[in-house]
Length: 172
Image (tube, rainbow, N blue to C red; front, side, top):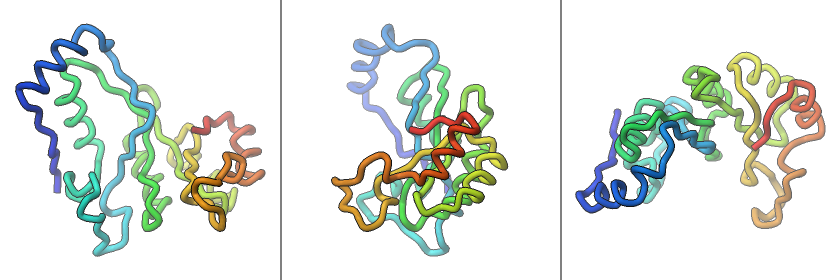
């Protein structure tokens, strides 16, 4: 399913023309884009009814993202730093493959969703295989610590940090 679910009113377009048209640069880089295919989730998985992803058919693929960007920011080149959505049911390996497949490392860059429990050999294999530029850890992947108490050093293992340093990867 390829739903876009982005439609602007005349008032939205007037606001864009008045406030943003002359201010936004010709090229926009969004450094936090969650893109993923429905296939990265188990069969039968569905987001909650109030999830923004239900507006897009339960996925947010590159084509949907680019179409939304063209509606929201007409006439702009759009680049992005992307990764899957950090949902517990997401297959992070499948998400890495998809992210890598849409990344050209010129205008579209991919990051690996990583949990502190991911074996460093698997992390390295995904980064190299999918030509990813770094990691995107999330507090929700840290187990045994309340979300609001998670600190950055808890989101990656020492071995994952060492690998990122050795390969010159970005961590966001």
